Image 1: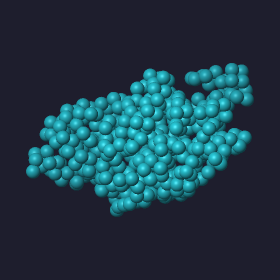
Image 2: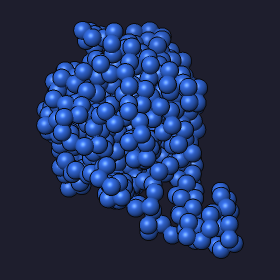
Image 3: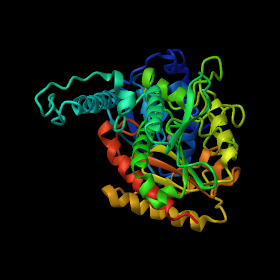
Length: 454
Ligand SMILES: [Zn+2]
């Protein structure tokens, strides 16, 4: 038995007596640290893979481990197991540094920024009938009246640029469809495990046009993804008719692909990733982006139901993935492209996620992806990395875009990892001020690739 493994076993006995971290309700992240590891050997990677399955430590891999030397691995560590964790890392001679001392402070900053963004929206709206609002940090309209912020109408006014709740996003979809003069319609594609409606906005007419599917938020905590898609929907509603690259397609957009998890990340645990279906006596949820019928249960998954990459008992065990699968299967003959928004690391992921084999049309996959990358770069200078996950990051099987290409036969299938980049120290938790810049760069990419599909 290697020393590292022995220390791991001893550490587990010690932490097994303490209350499991995952049982906490309305959990906060006070004094949780984000630790960045730079493994350089396969032994170190192998050790980290074992650590990833050690749920007793309560650690959370924000970026998974795969091969040495290619990228940093960021892990959130609770205060109660921090010393044990660091001892394990040092015994295995893995270089590390603490890049965030208190994850709760990131969450607090994000909450404040979102409240401000929402307040600005309301004041702007409140002034519309009274003369225009004076702008940020001023509580008055141009005519001198006070702009009173009341949030009750936010959902149907505008949630663009904010981190909105699932109910608000659904209400907003209904409202914009009703005001679109027939351009957009809402279709409920099913309900989640908890009974929430999954609403898709269709932009453009049904019939013979080719179609494009876009979803976001299949991982609950990746809030920038639904917010970016809401921004894009808003742009589509005003620009679809005048842009040939958009109006030659019918678009289907699902801003929240995992509503149960997304709501839980708002109400109870900001860093919740999975669905909310019970899986074992003490653990809840399946990783819905490991739950698709494409190399199910292979690379980048764990058979432990408490793991964040638990794929479920079988492909499509989750209601949310079933609903998307059924809708896509019903429309697959017309679908030319499947896009799925995640965060983070600023990556344009090409098929396949599960392994190093390449699809026969990989050159075309890469050509279009690289054009999209250039379009992103043209907006704010962000330099995304293009490639298949096993080549640039880590292998992940059972993913939605692999299924879309392999099983539904949709030629172009991509996953985006949005802001921030892989060197950032805030990961999933970024201020609302990043929503509009993210929306602009991703909208530019979507327009560009839509004009390039063959
Ligand atoms: Zn994700």
